[in-house]
Image (tube, rainbow, N blue to C red; front, side):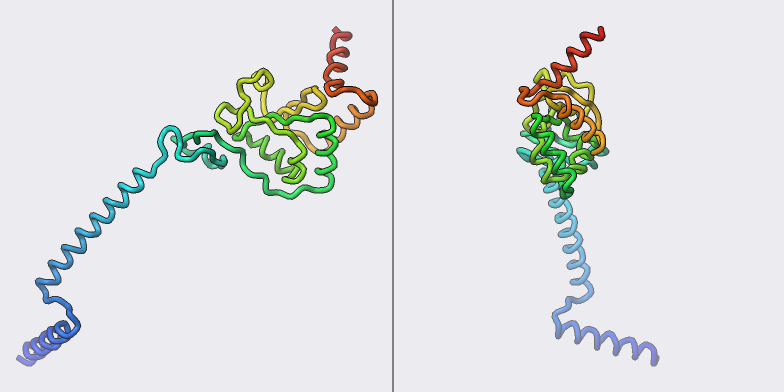
Length: 211
């Protein structure tokens, strides 16, 4: 009996406390619980609908977008309307990189590449952002931003990157030592005042004479 009385007293105290703070009785709490669950279901439905409508369509949701190497492992990544931009070069340039880039620019150097090419992006990072401003880059991927993929120059390439230095092509990723050797050879042989493309013509003559 004492237990029953104690239980009743507790229920009365709880009921009075709920009455004071506006807490609904048991039946009201059940109704409120059902309403909350319904609101949660509707909330998730709205969220899923919003995510589905925000998914990019076949042509992409942006006019231009920077390529992220992680996209290579994802499926159904939409191509932006204006094509993919290569990853931004964040590394700073060393003095050596700046000197080599300046020498390359004096010979009308062009770097042919593709936004998705890891060797191209590694090469750019090696030079750094300041030095790359002196190097002309041509995008050859068909879905790259400002691509020149349909030009004869891009179509003739065997791979990326390909460096065109004074008209002559040097395929593959290169070290600073290799660039310096190439530049020393060209600058040490090239006649003073020769027009751009002299190295290409000279190599073609050498190749012809050997044939």
